[in-house]
Length: 289
Image (tube, rainbow, N blue to C red; front, side):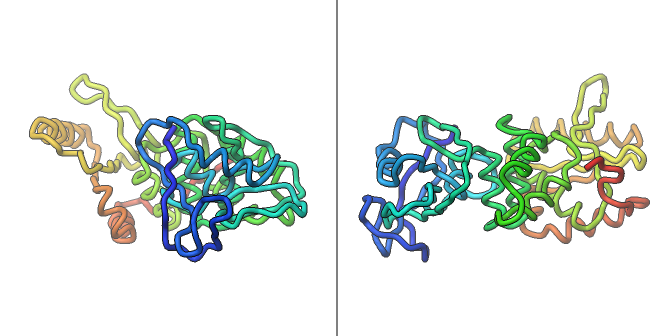
């Protein structure tokens, strides 16, 4: 689990120093880091200052759970609706609804499903979808568990319900991509109505098992997303070129895009895929939801 650090940031959130989390010019903020989690006294101060039943929630819980999408946010908690004064150093959400709770390193936190639902009121669809995709990859939730949360905790009067339902409806299964960049490309192809590809399609090239990021069997077309270390060595570059030539020998047209390019110019990448002969059919045909 990624750790939390507390840092000053210059956002417009209402803050103060009553609980020791920040000042009016430097609100409390949490950031995801790669360092081992060894305990954070501010987390306990947060829980005790907000009273019994307080949960880290919304964007703060999103960072605490650790999926792809956002990395630094204001401290947010959900508390029972009462007259108890709250510390000025956090964003407080009062509720009369009963929320299920989880714990991460003894920190009370909203469930990952409730976190995605709550964040759907404040974050764009691509970030919610990316977070869900990586949460499935991490093994901390499933589409069915998210649907259960939507039924039990969403609905009329709950902000984010409509957007979270849309994100779930656009998923055909619990198969996740291998990276945030792959999800971003999948999302943009979805929005441009390209047909849904198979994920992680296995082919055997020269007797070796290879996995294609995206594959359209009927068209024999494939796409691979290259990360920053895709050609980090001469041996790796040679291996990729051998594999690409072997796929061409099998009649598979392989197109490759860098994660950097997908992030910077997604519409151009999608436009290039529109040029693939026969590609224009409805996205996710026959999905069961």
